[in-house]
Structure formats: C-alpha cells, structure tokens
Length: 513
Image (cartoon, rainbow, N blue to C red; front, side, top):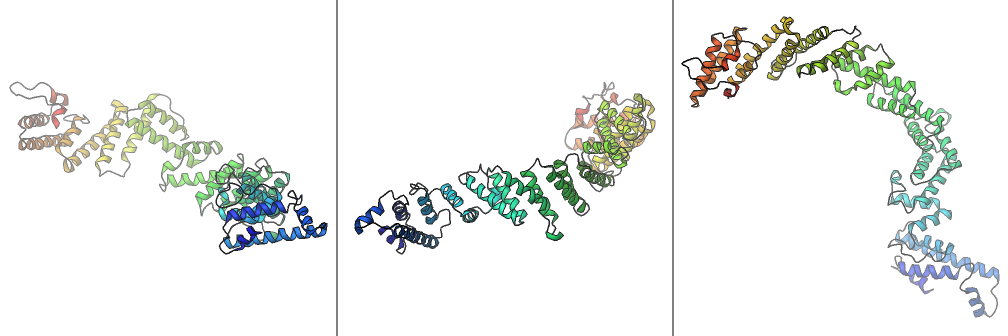
C-alpha cells in the first residue's frame, strides 16, 4: 500500500523502482492461485472465512485500482504501450516473475515481452501504433535489422492479422502493405494469408462499381502481391498486362518510363509478346532519332539492334544503323592501320546493306577506300587543325590501301595535305609545317605550292634560329630549303651526305627543333 501511495504522489510518475516493487508485490498478492496465502491472511485477520464472492470481487476491484493508477501515471509520463507500466503490470499478472527485469531505462520489461503481451492479450492496435510511432517507415522493418530483430515475430503476427482484417473490408492496398512488411519481418504466409493476398491482388486499384480505378496503384499492389506469391500465374499475368497498358499509355509523353514498364513486364513474363513489341517500338523510334542526328548513337546497344533484326528482318532503320556502325568501325580500324579488322567490318557492313558480300580482297579494299574517302569528305571541322589532320590521315590510309590504282584518292590526299600545310603556315609555327613535310605525305616536286610552303617554313625557321644564336641550325634549315627549291625528287636525300665543300651536320628530323 505504501508503494502505491508513493506512486500517487506528485513527481513519482517516473519512479520506475517503486513501480516495479508495487507491480511485483501486488501481482503476487492478487494472483488467482494465491501463492502467498493472502486469502488465508485475511481469514486470520477477520476470524472467519472470506466468501468466494467477496474474495473475487475484492480481488477484481484491487486489480482495477492498480491498473487505473498505472495507466494514469503512463499518461502523465507520456509512455507508449511498449514501455507502459500498465503493460508491465498486465504481463506480470499473466506471467509472474517478469518484473523487475534489466529492460533499460525506458521500460520495466523487455520490448519483446511487451510486444508479445500486447499481441496475445487483444491489444494488437496499441502494439502497431506504438511501434509505428517509434519507427515511422515500415519499409525499413526487416528481421535482420538490429533495430527490429527483437520485436520481429510479434510484429509480423500483428501485421498479418491486420492485413486479413483490412482485406475483409476491401482495403486492398493497405492489406498488401501489411502482408509485405510481415514477410520482411520473417513471416511465412499461411493459407488464410495467401488467400487474402490473392484476393487483394486481384482487386487492388479497382474501385467499386468501376469507379476510382488507379493504374499506378494497381501496378504497385500487383507488384507486392506477385512478390508475396511469385508462383501464382494469374497474378503474374495481371501484373504484366497492367505494365504493358501503362507503357502504352505514356509511350509518347514519357518514353523513359514507358520503356521501364515494358522491360519490367518482360522480367515478370519473359515471353510476353506485347511487352517485347513495346520495347521494339521504342528501339525503332530511337533508331530513327539517331539516324536523323537527334540523339547520339552510343545510346543504343548493338546487341539490342541485332536482336530486333532477328525478330523483324525487314526493319530498315536497324539495318541502316548497323551498316553505319560497321562502316565507322571499318574507317577507324583502317586509319589506325588495322587493315584486317577494317576488312572484317566491311564484310559485316555489306551484310546489313542487303548487297551480295564481295569475294576477293580487291573488291573489299575498293569498298574500304570509298568509305575512307567519304569519311574524309564529311563536313564538320574543316577549319580546325584536328579536323584537317584527320582528313589527311583518312585519305593517306585510303591511298595506302588502294595502291597504284588509287589515283583519285591520291589527288584528294595531296589537296588535303596542301590545305593543312597552308593552315599550319597561317596559324602554327614553321616547325609544324616542316613536321608535316617530314611525314612524307607528298613527294618533292609533286606539288609546287606545297614545296614552296615548305621552303618558306625552313627559311622562316632559319631566321628564327639565327636570332636565337643557333647558327648551325640556321645553316641546316637553309640547306634543306635550297634542296627542296631545286626540286630534288627524293626527300630522303635531305638527310644524306652533304655536298662536297658544304659542311652540314646531321639534318634529320631531330634537327627540326
């Protein structure tokens, strides 16, 4: 009695020690089995037996008084159902020797014991409300999380029971959310659970009498139901159909979301033709945009295009995209000197062109030369040094492949080299022009304008070297200019023995700088 009176005093609503003492003693005294002989004590005090009716009435009255006091103290202290003294009192009355325990500063009994008591004594809503207030995001409730492991089992049972209640009243989305959370907490769905999940999956997102239909809510709910019952073919079929329907609905307004929907449908039902058709339509649209220059080619995977062609052999955009891709690969390989790889790419390009694959290296090389010349003619960066150097490299590769029969390629190569030389003369240094000359793109005497540009570059560099005090370098540059001006046919002679009477040091490429 003193313990109860102390708890009723102001400021005692957080005195856990006194509360534990009061709960343990009164639960012992009022146990219906009367292990402490309380009834016998009263009989001795009264000198007469305590009638059963009077004993039970007094016992219930005292239990109620203690419960009411503890509840009031819980409200005053703001304790939830999991840490409430009232919960600890009820648990001690149901299963003695729980209180006191090493439950930490927030409660008199462990959370797991409190949760189990609430679940098994008709206070499931109080359990879920208290736990949700502590952890507002049920998506994070998992059995393997340290924060939720202790209460996982009673929570899963409570959620499954609430899920069934919600399914009975048509709260389909909420029911599926409860079953999903229960599964994450380790719950294995029973027969009644599975029946409720199947019913909720078939009805989620559908309003009564055809009203209130929500495609997004239906897809989300079907995803949950399918995850809970992956072996159920009817749920998979309905989910696939809804995903395809949503993909078609936003095909033009949100292509990215549409593609995601079709791709997900194929994961759920790998052989669904409608889902595959939707993805193929998106790929065709992407191919057309790429071919029109509206989006980069890198956005499309070659494997996906080849798969599309297997399903639709007459798809012209796919054929053209692959043809252009292999043409680019052939040009890149040839300009890098990988002739075998370039020829292989040409064969693949021709395959997707619908033409007969040429037999013989000469015919393949002829196609490759045409590709290099065409690539060199593509407009875009003519006025830049990098663009002009690439053009020279492409045309030089074409000349190397064509051999003596490539006169037209040689003429274009010479013109490109001259353009680059004049560009370097105007924007670069004399050494830039001389370096181009030493690449041996044009032989001495083949183009008078090029020869004169190189001569001018040597003379300009000779003057610069004289100003820097490099007399030997200046002499070598003037000697080179003199030989080019004389029209010597072999550029290699520039680096051969010096004429008799003229002392020249080594004038190879190392002397350029």
